[in-house]
Amino acid sequence: MKSINISLPDSMRAYVEEIVATEGYSTLSEYFRELVRQDQKRKATERLETLLLEGLESGTATAIAPQDWQDIRAAVRERLAKRSNPTEE
Image (tube, rainbow, N blue to C red; front, top):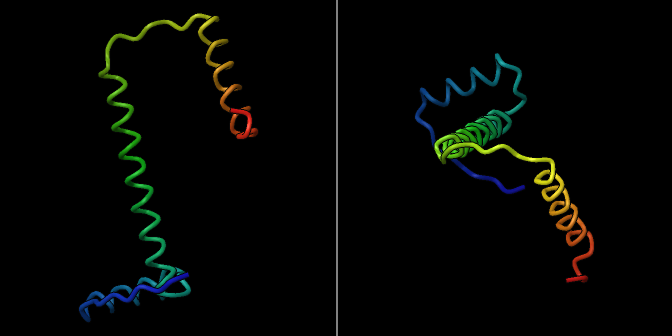
């Protein structure tokens, strides 16, 4: 694991130290890692919401027939087989 040094004004450092002491974090690093994880999760959620909205706005939905599901399953099985046997291409 690599280190990153950051500079904070005294007021922010005092705030972070208080949060670490009162909210159960064992170190300042643990607190900052949690902030980064929360930011990653937020951005992933935003990306998912964007993709869902794009899907909703992409046009009229069409019904999927049983044959469509069979075709989808076959395509997934084929991809999985290629992934587990990469030399068989």
